[in-house]
Length: 132
Image (cartoon, rainbow, N blue to C red; front, side, top):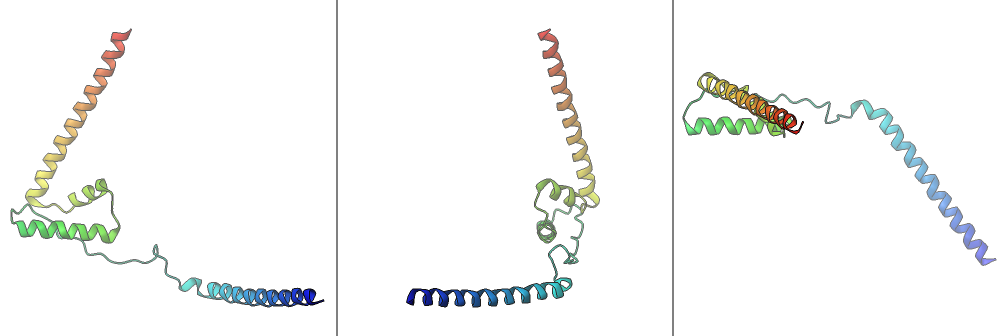
């Protein structure tokens, strides 16, 4: 009979623990239901990040360094990690001489890209025609 008494005792202990766990679960559910509207998720948190001052093309190393540092801080605060997105965003803060330089540079890049695309296209077509 001692074995049955042990089993009954263990069962009673397990049932008491289960009851306690259910009560704790009910408290947690209630807290979540009541506090769900008060929870601030990372997507709802909005922080105003100051925009960097435009860079006008000054050859002053300190001014350029400060501009680049402020851009890095801006990207970090906004969570921008992709280099292409950083380039797009950084060019928006160029002013005066720097803007003129970037405009010319981007036109040159587009022309080279168009030429290389055209060259690849012509090579493909000529190789296809030579096979026939």
